[in-house]
Image 1: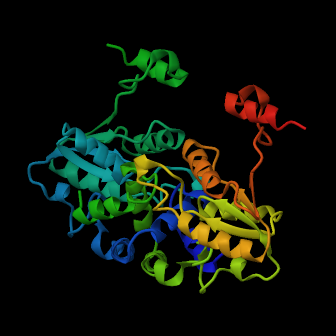
Image 2: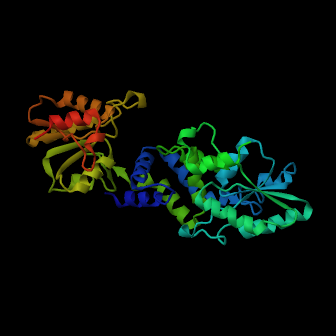
Image 3: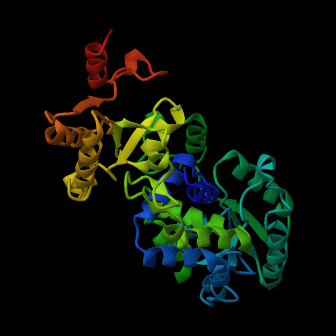
Length: 198
Length: 198
């Protein structure tokens, strides 16, 4: 095997969820592209951090100092929705149903992955909530994933903000997903579906 | 959303089997890497075609003029194993059981994907086989995938070389895969397993 090939495979394996076979397939596909495309992709990766930054307010990705959402005066300052990742924020933005602000934690608490409250943007969430509650009541919407680490993070946030004056804690509704089938739903989903029936 | 982010997502989607969500996850993961790592990966992609070429003999990847296998005098000139992709070649090389030469077609015949005998290295295979048979008898081992397009390619090669003097055509054995279970084997696999029983 070519050492350069192996090296590029190794670099591509650092992408999340990419194993040795997929990485090798990527390199072969890249070898079939023309120079211009390789320069485009390679250049975009080299300059990624120069071109894209994280918003210092909400930690959404941004090309300017603060992101478009934090910058928007039409957004409701009384609502702060807490998500794990930028992709979660995008999913909610795409619905067009939410007009408040966001806070991106950068992950969820998971000691096995070295994700602790300190590595997440939880202190920054406290500072931000304090700033917003100074202006009026705040609804803090916890929208972490319905997974073990997401639940742990939700509990941790609840413990910090629960009982604070001017803050109402809410969570995204749980139950059957649209398009899913009742017979294949797991116990936890059915439990939530039953509890949140109306 | 940040246009630079979207653009990088779009570029990464050109990798085989990468959808919009996985591409977005890749960009976020890359944003969490340090500048050195980004330069390393981006640089490897930009310089990929400068650093890695295809061997003009067998179309394996190579860093020199001809690849290490074609260059090796200990390899058996009487055997030529035809594969679809470089990754297939690597899988066979890893077994350490084959000491002949290879020929990488660059895919399989599939008109829906614009893969025709003309886009594959089949003419080059003919030239190569002619060169090798001039020196002595040649075993041409067809090792395309057991898929529809792989079978079509095997048939096409058989038609070209079948009956040529000095060439023996063989194919990789078919049957039950190691570690698989008879009860889950499909009809085609069982048919091959029965036919090649010994």
